[in-house]
Amino acid sequence: MARKPESDYDVIVAGGGAGGVGAALGAAAEGARVLLVEKYGFLGGAATNAQVLAYCGFFQQGPEPVRAVGGVADHVLDELRTLGLDCAPFRSPTTSNWIILLEPEAVKLALDRVLTNHDVDVLLHTRVAAVSRTAERLQSVTLAGMDGRRRVAAEAFVDATGDANLAMLAGLECRVGGADGRLQAISAPIRIGGRDRSVPIDRQAIIDAFERYNEAGAYPVARPDGGIYTDVPISGDMWWMMFDHALPDLSSASFTAAEQAARAAAHDYVAVLRRHVPGFENAYLIQTGPQIGIRESRHPPARYKLTGEDLLTGRRRSDAVARAAWPIEDHSVAGKPVYRSIGGAGFADIPLDCLRAEAIDNLFYAGRTIGADDMAYASIRVMGTAFATGEAAGRYAAKLTAA
Image 1 (cartoon, rainbow, N blue to C red):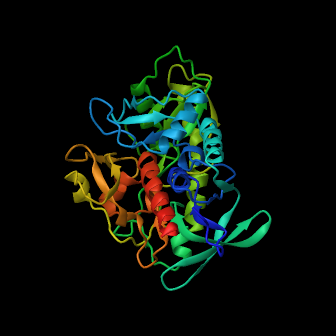
Image 2: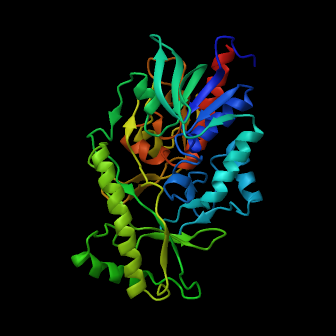
């Protein structure tokens, strides 16, 4: 594909999580020259910046793992296998959903390698600070990095920021939270070392210990079932999701309060385990974050909004570009997720118009920015589905530049 002379790139992707990586690889597979911009010093999104150490959405729900996502995501899984992860489907004993367990350092390196191997240019520590547009098209973005600001032009753009930052800067009116303005709760998983792995984890002991903690503890837990936990591949650390927090708005003050509470709670919770749960006498906190896990923020306008009814009926479509297979996982109430299964054959089709921005012809969405109502959003936001919507967004963005 020949790049038009007035453009620096064919496709610019904002955001280096699963959706952004999928978009960059999808566009590169179509022969486009691609730039991927990421605000952190590493790629991976929630898998590396929020301790969400599982790829959800690669498999359908059911007694056996049925694959729902393939394509360019397989390049990532193949590279993870070279780094020691088996990437086999793992059935969560808590939710019974099929996931792929991750180790964040392996994810960071695997994504670096895969994008390099597919000739994608990557700029880390870089944000999109401004956008230039005409009535119906984006022309360029202003990137803010360690070396200052510079303008970069492209023929098409993909917003995979998760927070719709590119769409917002382009002047699109974004909805905050659900239809009622309420945001899905945040979570803050942690890693714990020093557990005696010869002693089985006693879930009832955890439940009992936190019933007592909730009576006077500074950070009462919302999960009454002991939370979700598993062993991290390679290291054998314990991964534990126990802290959930309602986020009232998207203000910096609210995020600051949530981050500080999550860190303090992590220390409290590990101390409770040491005192009251067998096998944790020498346990210690390895890591929080780097940030809290954000489930929801802004929703930009798309040309079609996937609906809960689409998912509950397992709707098939002739214009499908990806599949949604993860159950509808509603975290409207902190610590009390509600699951609803996908209908039909166990997946629903996602049409291209969910990935196309309303009113801007060369802007596409990937990951949790795609068009979806409250119920559908609770399914499509996961990373496996994000790889699929990202690949589709990248491929169609690249095809647009060739038209």
